[in-house]
Length: 404
Image (cartoon, rainbow, N blue to C red; front, side, top):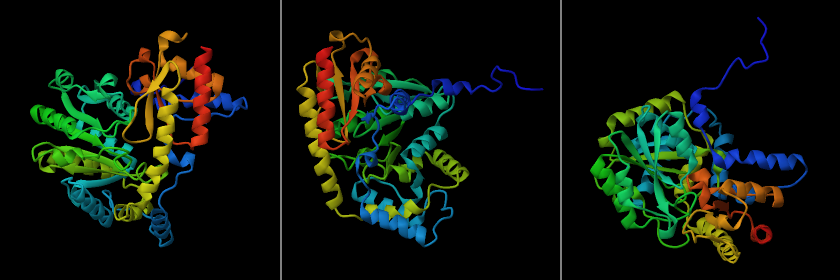
């Protein structure tokens, strides 16, 4: 029987709730490029797009692995040498773990997916920050679980309210997600704030996912690993990768580290079971992990030098625009800007972002794509491009807002 013109196959219902604003909004930019209009992309945190490259030591280790024939499968949890290197580095940072409590994953994204898939049944609940990284929203939706957002307050340095978090906990709450430094705000949590997260998890018997993929990209203050203050009675999964700290996002090499695994022995077995089923993370980049963990500080110092300059230009330029402002992030490479929507024709942050894209061919991401209120006027801006490019973008923003 021939196919009719009506659709024969339809996607699963879970896909309807699967959103990833950082990439979804690119569709609008592509339409402009099809018209011959070049677009400046400040929507995605891919440092390689803006001239950054991994350390030479890591590149050489990766190439050497390929040339020496390491092109097959690795053990599903990762090469033992890489696991040992990660465990040694974790120990120096105060994170209690061991090689058999670490799994190397297909980027930090797969680490988050492994944990959530192992833990969540349909209807189970996960506490996530708002604003926060939309990957977690997408994974939770895919699993037919329920995302429960806790608010990060822009009037208080984007800090959470412990009482609000506790008020959102129910018998179905299983996981508390912490992102530090935060994406999209770039804010860094103090020891006091991290201790509040730990106390909540201890009191309500929650597992903590702490996403620390920007922990080396800190401009002021000091990054404190949450697992280092968890004691011996709170289960913590620390997620990390080569992508941001070492500027190698395309290598898709991340890992999860379990602290207090004795509290979650069956869940740990589920992690390994799922890791076995997908065979392994990419083999060759695993040979770069030891090199990364044993590197001196020169690369990071040089990296932060450039990023710090771009951060300062961003903060000063955006805060000098009448009707626009931004925070002063302590880490990562993002700021959260804010437009006074009441002084514009726009009702939502997304309307503003799309109008700016059409008019000036510059792409930001609307804050509501990260869980901020749509009427709040927030936008996330990536300050990875070089200083002249950023200055040009911010002048275009100033001109656009002035004409509103």
